[in-house]
Structure formats: C-alpha cells, structure tokens
Length: 603
Image 1: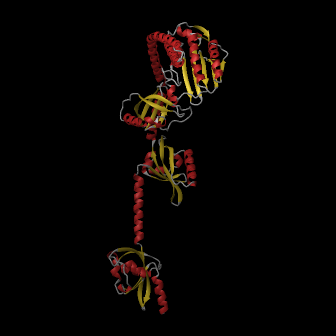
Image 2 (image 1 turned 90 degrees about the horizontal axis):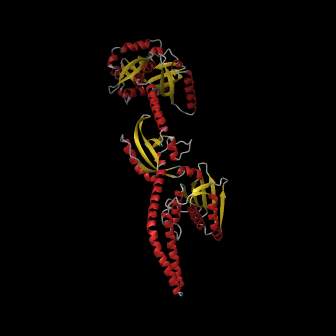
Image 3 (image 1 turned 60 degrees about the horizontal axis):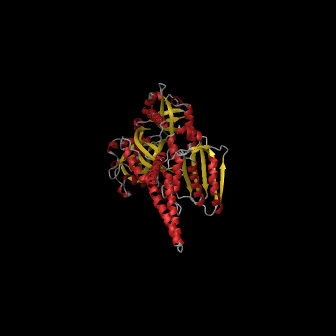
C-alpha cells in the first residue's frame, strides 16, 4: 500500500495540470503544479487551509453546488470555468473538473484544475488584433480584397465604393466582373513565375470596370496568403485614373514641346539636374552624336569641357532660381571623338515639363563666326601690312641700292677681305627680297586677270622646282583629272602661290621623300588643288597662326610667303587651308572657282 501510494503521489506531482484534494472543505493534498499555480512554495503551507480561501469572491457562493454537479455528472471530463485567487491575491482563470475520491477512508473531492489565464489573454489579444485589422481594412484609404477561386471572398468598403457597388453586391461578383480575364491571366502568370523564383509580393497594374461600365486605372500590390484553409490572393489597390490622366496630359505637353523644338533651327537640349531629357537633331549633330545612338539619360557634363564644369554648375543654379533667360555664354564642348567645339549657350527654366521644372538650353556653334573673325583679323593684318609696304618699300629701296653699290665698290677696293663683303651683299639681297615681298602685298589684286588653263601654270612651277627636288632626293608626283579646268586669274600671282607652297613642301623634307600634287574639279564649280608632303608636320598650336607675318618654322624664313599666298588666293575668290599631323606630314588645300562661276560672281 505504501509503495502504491508513493507511485500515485509521484505520478500526480508529474501532472502538468493542478490537482488538489478537499476533505470537508479543507485542503488535504496538492501537487506541485497546483502549488505553482497558487504561488505557494511548500505543501505544508497549504495543508489544512479551507478551499474557500482560494476561490474568487464572485464564485464563492455557487462553489459547493458546482462541486456537487461535477461529482454526479455522468461525463467526468466536463470542465467548468472558474476564477481562483493566488496567495498574492492575483486572479487566475481556470477550467475545473471534480471527482469523488476516498481519503483516509473518508469521502473527499479531487479537483483537477487547468490554468487558462495565458490562453484567455492570448484570445483577447487575438480578438483585439482581429478588431484592429478589421478597423484598418475598413478605414484604410485603399481598396483591399481577398480573391479565392475567381471569387471575391473579402472586400473592404473603400473597394466597393471605388467600383460603385455595395459590399453585398461585391460578394456576388467574380473577379472577371471587375477586371478583364486577359489581365487576370497575365497577373496569374506573373505570380506563378515570381513564386518560382522566391518572390512573395507582386505589383499589380490593370484597368478595372465599374458598375456603370466606366473604366478606371488601378495600381497596387498582391501577395499569396492562406484564408479559411485555402490559398488566396490578398491585394491592395488604388484608383490612379486621375494620376494617369495627368501623366498623359504632361506627356502630351512634353511631346508638344519636343515637336516645337524639333523644328526650331537651332540646337536645343532639355535637361533635368544635369541629365539629358531631350535633344533635337541639330543638337545631336552639334554634340557629335551619331544617328541611332541614345543621348537621353546621359550627363550634360560628358559633353562640357572639364575647365567649364564649375562655372556651368553655378550657372545651372542661377537658371533654376529665375524665370529669365541667361545671356549667351561661351563654352567648349567635347564630342565623343575627342574633337573640341567652340559654342555659346543660353538657358532658361521651363516649368511643368513632365511634371517638373527643367532647363532648356540653346546652343550656337561659334566655329564659322570664329573662322570669320580670324579671316577678318588676318585681312586687317594684310591690309595694314599692304599699307605699310606701300609707304616703306620705296623708302627702303633707294638706300638699299646705295648700300649695294658701295658694297661692291669697297669689295673691289679691298680684295683682301672678300668674306665680309660677301656677307654684307647676301644680307642686302635678303633685305631686298623682303622688300619685294612687301611690294607684292601692296600691288592691286585684280591687275592683268585673264582666263587661263590651270594645268600649264602648275606644270611650269613643277618644272622650275624639279631640279631642287632631285638634289634632295624628293620625288614630285602630279595627278590631273580629266576635266582640265580653266580659271580667271593672274598667272604670275598663281605661279608665286604654287612656288611658295611646293617649295615649302620640298624644304620640309631634307632627307628625301615624296610630294604629291592632285587637281580635281568638283561639282560645286570649284577646282580642288592638294599639295601633300611627308615632312615632320607643323605643331598644332601653330596651325591656326600660320599666315601671320614673320611666323615661320624655317630658320631663315620670314613668314610672308604663306601670308602673300593667302592674299592672292583670296583675291581670286578662293580659299587656302593647311592641316598637319606631327611626324606624318602637311596638306595644303586650295579651292579656286572655275572660269564660269567666277565670271558669274564678278558680273
């Protein structure tokens, strides 16, 4: 019996629920779970205490009747809700079951008690959360729905109002009544694909059909959830019809801007915080962007020379804070091929372009203007030198004649020092040559003009230089096309031009090589003459200055040869251009009008 009692007590103490034995209203036994539940650490502290001490006052009066009911109940597993008091007077909620037992041979009651305080709190919390979620769904300013098997199983009031239905009507509808089947199938495919790669949220963009048949544009998000034991689609959507209409209006306005700008005869770029939004064809051409290559989305600073970045940023801040256009400011653009382009830019702020304030910039290519300025400056220099030559050359010639005569006289008188007199004579000849070149500048430009074939003029110059070319091992090559054009010209002046340029080419190649002269008539009525040498080339910084007086790369040159040649070609209504690549050679290109065109121009 003792062993059985020990086994019983051990088993009872292992129970997770509380167990207490009451004899004649007093507690005679309690297991460990019961002691913990009541906040008591020692069994002796509870033995002999009346059970009513731990019964909540609201349940105390009906406690005996409940015990009797439980004892005589046919189903001993029936639990009754009760509230007990812990030793510290805190209330605990329990479910209680009573069984009649014998204790020390006397009739007693065994109470099995399950603490449901945490469970009740959890249920209350869940109820609060359900209420909170329900309040949130019903008051959120967005449509919320749960779809299941092509049916709407939940819709909040906002969604019903958005579509123009009542909630009751919404639950009678299928998904296809609200959104077209094509869009439903498309979204279903996106969900299946997204789920396969681990996504749990799926953006939704679709058109909805309201109760009155009108169309609304919807945007939102959806996700897969379990609802009533089935996979369902939870979604939140907003009516973006107004936003869509506004975007369309802004897009139409932007397209209108672009159409207007497209036909403006100036390069125009629209940018937002330095990012290109639009550029018309002329701007693409100015920036050196090939057709078909994208420029939208690129930074404008990719095309502005680094030396202008800081000033351009300051200018942008000023532009975006004012409604007035800026004055034209000079800038240097860098094309993708590395070529630099001198331009001037004026900008103004444009409001509400695709919903934002942007900057519109007008670009003007300064290449022609700068070239014209250079031509004007050069012409002014030539004119000044011509005027100077007219006044000075005659004054110098007379003293030079005297100096030359006395030098010859002294040379014959003092034959023992011929070296000195030879140097003096050479220098006097050099001064005479410079004076003669000055006189050439001062000559009238339209003296002795007549129609002459170009080929004999050029061949006579080549024959003069052929001996010099052979001596320095340079081969002279010439190529005429079949047209053999005639030009209205001063033969002597043209010979002087060709002589100057071809001689320069020969002198640039003291180690030998090849000079090529080509002549071709163009469709625009001009004859194109190219003189190409294989010399060391001309430094880039000097190319733009060639033709200025006394600028030369020769040790004993005066720089007047190219200057005079320019003057002569301009008098013949033509152009002379020089291009060069270091260590590769120099190309001189001369364009002269053929006789018919020049006659028309002069007439």
